[in-house]
Length: 537
Image 1 (cartoon, helix red, strand yellow):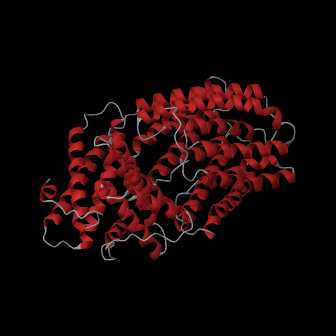
Image 2 (cartoon, one colour):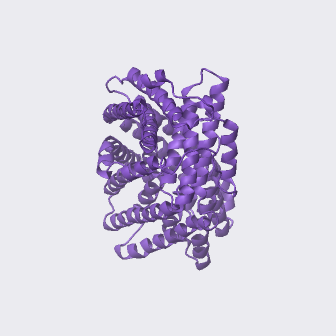
Image 3 (cartoon, rainbow, N blue to C red):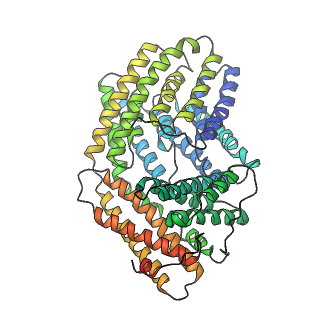
């Protein structure tokens, strides 16, 4: 749970973006002598953490929705704060907001930091002294800072307009090359490298499909097909060539052009998948009902417990609970441990930094900027490590209006962390996710049907190239979904027995069919042809 991983390939992008997005509003407010208003501009500035893995056209839309969602949650919280002084009512409102934010972020696959930042802003705002007349001005500050964050995140597109999709494709090629190389050196290769590579390829397809520019998109699609070939038939691939393409993509060199006979007609398989789209939002929201109940119940109970203990900032317990909930109970437990370890280390960092930040408000602003950068630089290595920077930053934000009793802040933060983690995890156990097994059954059926379609095409004497490519892409995507669904279901408790043998059989059969499809299409590098026994299997 606490092991450090390699940092994200693009860790520096959210780290630099959030520093620039936070710095300008904070320094302006500091110059005006109104640093107390920074708690409102932070709501908009922190939107700069989102959507860095998306093509710029898609990023513009997603960031706009994030800014609107952030300011909408802020507005609800501020209105509630202005209408009532009841802490119980405010905690209830915060729990409902946290549940809505969690479900919407999961349903739309917003990506990190997902609902955590949204819940932090809305929950903290519930306990800010507020009058109804002040709400429009404070919301306007958040919107203005959000607009600045939008510009900051879109600015790199002027220099590298296709940077995100190139990086995503390069990452997929690198992992596919590593899998192919490992398979050649070890006949008993574990499934994890293949699962990671398949997930990266699938994510790259989603990124490329949302990109603009037909010429660039088609060139990247050809490279992704080569990555899929390496997964389906690793013995027929060339890892060195895959890595060379990945290196070219990460720089500013022209797009690599795979030397194969894949024509534009065969790429209509990807076009067909793009046209199908995703499941309706209502269906995706419905499947997340247990997660919504977990979040609402856990956040509410954590806040109530904090109030019962006499803590003055129950929103810290609420946010701790909101940050725990992952795809299943096992991952939620991991996150609970990471959150506690990171927060306890973070309060020690806060204690060390307090004397420095009280020298002058300029020092307070600069230290918060450094912590913003450090959080994004470290959090992709492990959540707890990023929390070591996030915790002191959240504590220092409370000093923007006036200096606080640091001893009391540390005590309350430690208590709220322990209460939020304990109560939040108990709620995760109490609210079982029985739908995980149903989703696994649907994913299994989808793989088996996709495999049957591909096998029928392979059995035909002259299948249409576009149909064969579409069948291969659909089967590969269904396999990724099955593996993710199976892992999520395996981490849940108190549910009926999972069809583990059927999952293994379906995956093995589908992988053989994918290999046969690749050879039938002639996408492999070696002069191998589809074998009849592969098709029959």
